[in-house]
Length: 201
Image (cartoon, rainbow, N blue to C red; front, side, top):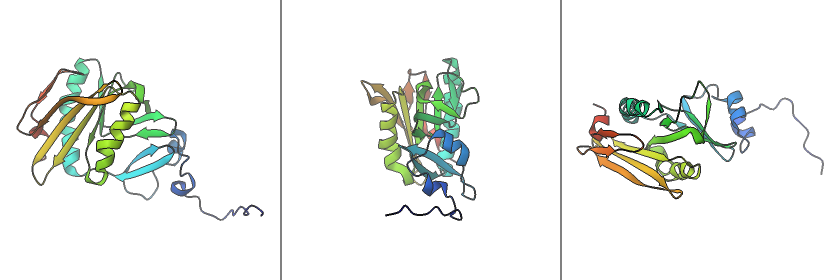
C-alpha cells in the first residue's frame, strides 16, 4: 500500500502533531499556544500536559509562602522562585508552583533538576493525584532533596503544609502542620510559621 500523499494544505497543530515528541527545544518554538488562555505546560515522556492556572486561594498561599521562603533560602545561599521550568530529562519537565534552587538561575528558561533543592506544589482539585502522587515520585526519581506540599481549602478555611525529605530514594516526612499549629523545620533551612498565614482573607 502506498504511503498517504503529503497534503500541503493541512493545518499544523502542535498539540496533535507533536504528541509524544515534545522537548524543551520544541516548547521554546511552539509554546504558549496562540489563542489559548494562560496555562501551565508540563511534559511527561514527550507528552504535553496542559492545565489551567491555579485559583486565587492557591495563588495567595504561594505568594505568602514565598515571603517566608525567600529570606530563609537566601540566608542559606539559595534562591527562591515562584515557578521555573524544571527539566527532569530531555522529554520530561515540570512547572512547580514554587522552587528553591541551590544558586541563581541566571536568567535561564530551563533549569536542570540537579540545581533544585526544594520544589513545591499547591494541591489543585483538578490535578490532585498528579500533585500528591505523580509529581513527588518524579521529583524523587530526579533526586531532588525536598518536596513541599500545600493544600488549601478556602471554603473550610483550612490549610496544611507538609515538607518531605528524600531518604534512600523515597520521600519521608520532615515536618507537617495545619493552620493554628506551628510548622517548624531546620532543614533545608530554618522555617517557623503558622500555616494559617497562607489563607486568603
